[in-house]
Amino acid sequence: MSVFLGALLRLVGTTIVLSIVVAVLSPWTHGSDAITVFVAFGCAALASMLLSLLASLSLQPGALVAIAAALAAEFACRYLGPWHVAGGALMVGATFGVLLALPPLIALLSRSGRVLATTLWIQ
Image 1: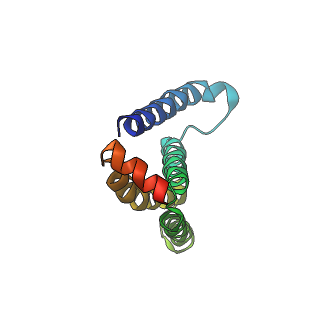
Image 2: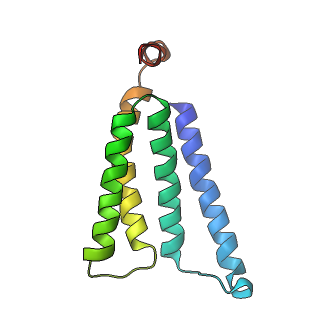
C-alpha cells in the first residue's frame, strides 16, 4: 500500500509542478492557461495509472467496467451537458474512472503481503 500511495503522490506532484511550468510559460508559447485543462489531464493521468494497475493485477473485468463508465460519462457530459468548460468532459469521465477503480484496488492492496501474493499467484 505504501508503494501505491507513493506512486499516487509522485503522479499528483509531477502533474502540479508541470502544470505550473506550462502556466508560467504560456504567455510566450501562446498555449492554453485554463486551469480546468490541467485538472482534466491530471485526472486522466490518474485514471490511466489506476486502470493499468487493475489490469496488471488480473482484474480486467473491473478495469473494463471502469473504462466503459468513464467513456459513457465523458460522452454524456460532452453531448448532453449544458455547460461548456475547457476539459470538462475529460475531467468528468476520468473522475468516474478513478472512482470505480479505487475500491477494488484498495481492497486488494490493503491486505497483508502474503494474502496479496497468494491472490496474484492464484489468478
